[in-house]
Each structure stands twice: as C-alpha cells, then as structure tokens.
Image (cartoon, rainbow, N blue to C red; front, side):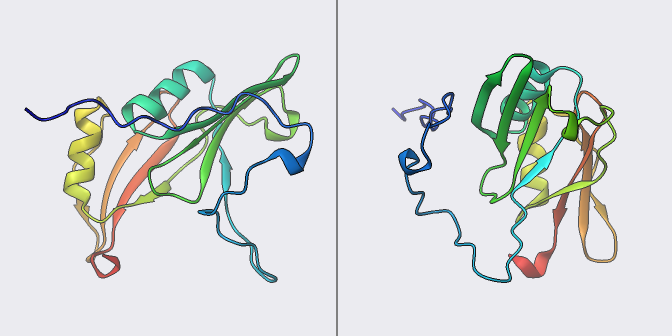
Length: 159
C-alpha cells in the first residue's frame, strides 16, 4: 500500500523576531551580491485576504510563509509559488501598498510542462484557460477571485 499522507509544509511564521540575529540563516536563499537587484516580493491587491490566501494556497499550491498582524489594522500574508525565489504578499492597513483590487495583470509562472501544470491547477479547482502557442512559447491564463490575472508560461528551450 502506498503512503498517501501529504508532505508536511513548513510552519507559517507568525512572530516577528525582536532581533535580526534571531532569524535563522536560510542556506537556500540566494546571496545578494553587489550590483544585484533580486525581485523577491510582489504585492497582489485583493478585497478579502482570507479568500485570497485560500485560493493561492489551496488552488495554486503556494506555500504560506507568513501571516502576521504586526499592528492594529495591519495584516501581511506572504506566499511563495513552488520552487520560486519570488513571493507574493497580500496586505491590509499598509497605505504604501494600497492598490485597487484586481488590477494586477499578467504575472508569469514559468513551468517545465504546461499541460501538466494546467491539469494540476484545474484538479485543484482553478479555472485555467486552454494552452496557446504564441510562436513557440506556450501560455495558459487564469485569474484569482479578485480578477488579478496570471499566466502559466512554458519556453521549451528552458527545460
């Protein structure tokens, strides 16, 4: 009989360390060398953080990294797509990140097998459009519950 238990997820960080020295070193994190500009966090504007968190975690399989309320009226949820070095953040109460919900367009998730990735997302309950071949690069689009749009992208030469 095959063991069908899910792999345990990393625990969600819910406390902010008082001292940066208390943050454990992550050996998987890329170093930030002089001249580098690492894109690591993209704010996604949503109306309901809990609904969006469920969509990204349950339907898309993103890892919930952080869900904190560092101050009254402030909430930050950070999620990371499988294998990605860049995460998304869902926030409330942070004026500098305040954008109209549903206005983010065309974030790309690069995959090695677009048909398999599309089928997996559909199997999780996401509504993903059919794959399109646009000159040898393949795309499949979908949206979150607020209308922010995403694209699966497959470039065969990057496998």
